[in-house]
Length: 582
Image (tube, rainbow, N blue to C red; front, top):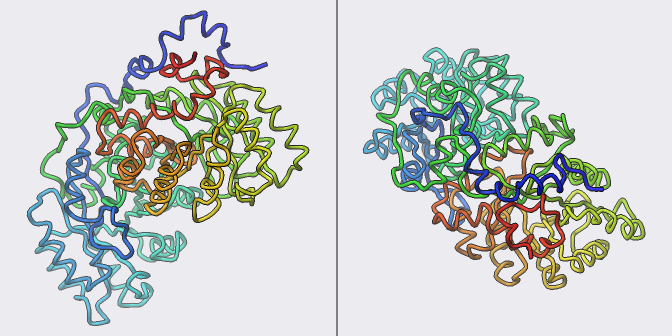
C-alpha cells in the first residue's frame, strides 16, 4: 500500500486539488527576513576577465560581458582580475587592467603579484607606491601558475608585506598544492587576510574546521555550493568570514547572488556576505551606489526579494538521503539532506514537484537499498513529487532483475529510470536491455549521467527504445557536452537535456535552448549534493524571455512525464499538470 503523509483520499477530500500548484507558489509566506527590506548591495569579491586558452566560442570572457551581466543581475560593484596578469607579464598586465577599468567607478582592479628576485616584478616598496597610485587594495598570487616558490626568503618578504599592510590576498588552493598548503600559508604568515575561491563543495570536512582556527581566512561560494551553507555557517559564528564572489563572466553572477538572496539569516548577516565583509577587507573601498536592474522580470524580482519564484518549479534531478543524515560517506557532506530538510528548503523557493531518486542507490551502488530510500522519501513528500528507480546489472543477475524491476514499478509513483556510472557498465551494454525493454513497454523515462566522454549511449538507446524519453543529465556542465546534447536532441525527438552542475557557466542555458529549442531543456539541481539555490538562480537570471524561463523551470517537464499521468496517483502529479490527466 502506498503511504503518504497525507493520503490521496484526504488530499482530494480536503479540496487540495484546487488550491495547490502556482497558487501555492504565490501564496507561500514571504520570509520574515525578506519583508520590507532595503535591497542588498552586492559587491563581487572576484571576477576574472581576459582571453583563455582553448575557449569555446560561446564562453563569456570579456569586460563587456562582465559589465552587461552585472547590470542585468543588479550587482553594484566588483573586484576584477585579469587572465593576462597570469598568462603575460604580471606588472605590465596589472597596469593595463587598471587603465581598462578607469571608466567604471564600480570596478576595482585586482593585481597579480610575484617576488622581485627574478627581475620581472617590483620590490614591495615600489609595488606599494604603484598600488597606492592606482588605488589597488586586493591582489592575487599564483605560485603554481607563475612557477615561483612561495617558501623562499624573497617570497616571504612579499607575503609578510601583504600581511603587515593588511592587503586582501585572493588565492586558490591548487596554487598552494591544496588546502594543506593554505594551512601552511596561514600558519607561516599569520593574520594575512585571505579570500579563498574555487574550492568545491566536496572539501567541506577539511575547509569548514579551518574557519574556526584561522580568523583571517575568508571563503566564497563560487564552487563551494554546500547545502544550507550560509545558514549553518551563520549559526556557527563565521558570518564575518563569508564573501560573495562569482568568478564571472565565466560563471553566472545570478546563480551565486541567489544563494545569498534566499539565505534564511538576518538582513544584517546577508548584508555582510553580499558586500559588507569585502568593504571592510578593502579598508572602505566600495561601489558608489546600489545598482538595480529596473527592467528585470518578475522571476528575477522575486529572487532578489527572497520570495518564492512565481511560476511552477519542477526539479528533474533530486537526490534524497535518509532522514536525519548530513552526509553519505566518501567525500560527500550534505547538511540536512533528508526529506524534512530538502522539502522545507525547496518550499521556500517555490517548488511544486520533481523527480526523486536516492543517493545510496547510485553513488553508493546499493541499488536495492536506494529504491527503499526513494520510497521513504516519497512517503514523506508534499504533493507533486514522483520517483526514479535504480537497478544494477552487475550486482544482480538477469533473473533477479526480471523479478525486481516490475516489483518496484508496482508503486505507480515510480515513473523514471536512473542508472549510474559507478555500476561500471555502459548503458547500451546488453545487460541493461531488460530494464530498457520494460521502460519502453511501460513508457518510463530515463535520466542518464553518461559513463563515456561522448553521448554514444543515448545515441544508441534513443532510436532503439522510442517510447522512453531519454534525459541527458548535466548537459550544462560544459559547452562541449552542450554541443553533443544539441546534436542528439536534433536527431531524436525523445531526447531531452537537464542543466545542473556546479560550473553554472554563464550563457550555456541560452546556448542549449538556441540549439535545441525551448521545449527540450529541463531544470534540475542535483540537490542536496549542492544547494539548489545556485542552480535556480542560474536559470532565473538567464537572458531568456519570461515565457521561455517558465518552460525551462517547470513547463517542459510535462513532455517527459505526460505518458505516465494516467497511471500516477493524483497526489504525485504537480498541480499545474493535473488538468493534463485524462
